[in-house]
Length: 344
Image (cartoon, rainbow, N blue to C red; front, side, top):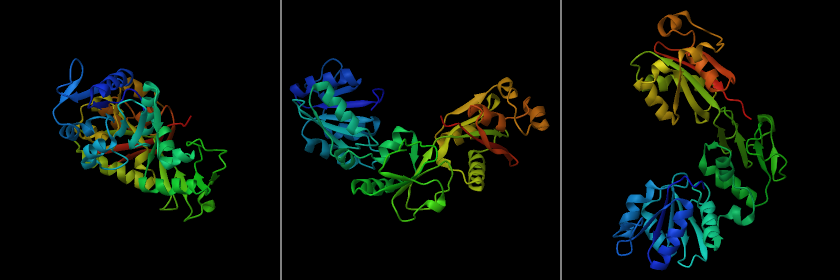
């Protein structure tokens, strides 16, 4: 777990507080303790249960130096799912054991437990089956390689197959998971080789998986270049993106960035669309866009914006001159082009 993530550390005894301060110093975390014990940088609370209810979603990781039962009772009412719950680790007050309690994989609790054990000289306790068996966990592999999980419920199916020593089929043409050469996996290059019903992983920036039961992983490599009329609402922009992606068979989960001309940097609909997609919009000057050799420059755009191409030029520029998958498409108010960033 990166140390830049927000970590909350709870201590209930003086001995535990000494340990908490040590962890906070190494993890850049915040220490919390009962008001009677709080001093200096330690933040006081009156009720741990009520305090955790307020803080649970505000931190990426929680470390309880307390009995596991206390931690369980505090966090239980606030659990949502393994793709959103923060990491939770429990240490005894002597620091002999650091137990990964919740969100071991995606939340990073396993890594956090190991880090805590290293800091205090204790033993990390990790009980997730794949870690115990020494087999790769597909949710961890996906996260480590920047892949978006399309259907989280299928992770347990693939992980279960690996635990049962079954061969898992993988479609991953660019070896983004780094599994090439691993004998536990059978590599499939096309749909004809795929065995529907067998456990498998399909990695693609297209919606081309032939098996609804496969674990689908999406690389974040698709770049949007956009132009729009002044005042166009977010729904119109989003609708055109969806229509283009549906027609081209592209995966919305693979969208990584959105670019446009800097004259649109205050365009509310465009900013809202970017936020809805979960991407930070990047804006380019006319001079930057004018240096791009776009395939479909427009005289009308040149007259209106002072540059021959916005959508295509932005997509090409933001993708580091990657492949233009979808040339300029237009509605009355929105222009969109899609490029694919080169995979290193």
